[in-house]
Image (cartoon, rainbow over all chains, first blue to last red; front, side, top):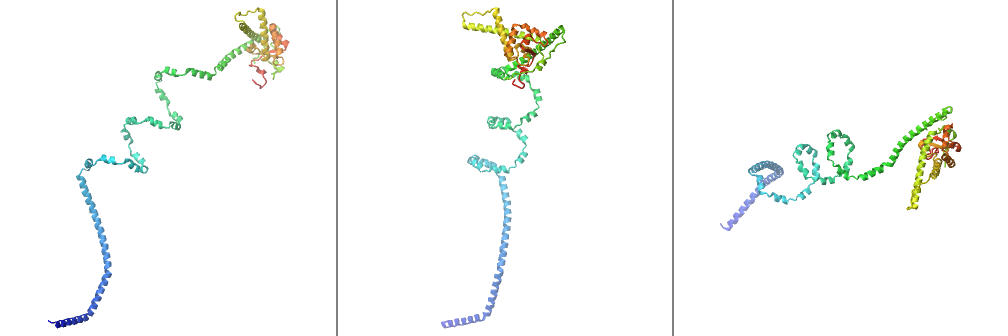
Length: 270
Length: 164
């Protein structure tokens, strides 16, 4: 085929094509309209569908996660139980862990300093704790002798303000409550007296000083004077009375002798 | 100075002392005078010893001197006693008091005269038995009376409500 034929063929083809393109215009228009409507429909419906799909997917994910977590928990629990059953954890710790080193590295002071003991104590219901304690059993288990042996009583007594304590004691009430009779009945006075070293007591007494003090306080001369005075007073009174009676007797006798009319002045004790 | 006085009716009402009480008082006073004489003798002996220790001899006065000294001592003792307290030691023991007839304390002069009369003529006391008011010759001469008074010290002669 020569060039001319080619050009003819090309022209013919081109003409046919143009004719077909032109004749297909209505088809193209209808197709375009249909396509545009389809796109519009898809554009309108697609977002709603996709959002619903997204929501559905989220819900599904959450469901799956929950189920998976539940399964995981059961699985982990079973695995751990089996694991712990299979090993001797105490022995392992005892063999492998250097507890001394751990304790040595622990700064107990810092730990204690960081603890708010007040808050801890405030949260404690001490009454309830004490109510639950079986004190009898606790006391029965205490070796009191050992405790007392370790107590420094001197130091404790030194810190006690005994004066204040004694001031607060109502001694009268205490003494009133004491039933002294049984105490006295059980008291072996003879035994007590036999054990007293009287010589030592007397040796320590300043008898001369005591005697001097007693004599100073007694006003002995006054006592002697008053007792002697009472004695003399009685004697003198008796002598005076007898003398007065004798005076009266003598006067009466003389009056009778001289035949006078009785004693002019009968003796009358002053 | 207040003189405790009692009036006549009070003296009349007060019982005057009889012969027995007054004799016993005189005996006690005699003992006192003898004791005073002993003291005087001791004083003389002490003075002698101080003056001449080497030639010391115990004094031995004769009876005349002793009587004179005793009379003087008795007079002085009774004067002081009656003038100051109204009673001698014997009168104090027997509960007697010497008053003037007006009821006051005798005073120094009256006491001195009465003391001298008592020493010179003690038998004058016997008149208290014969007289109606139990007054001795000395009482009649100096105007005194002896009454029973058992109150101590100045007794009721003290001023009423005064110092004890």
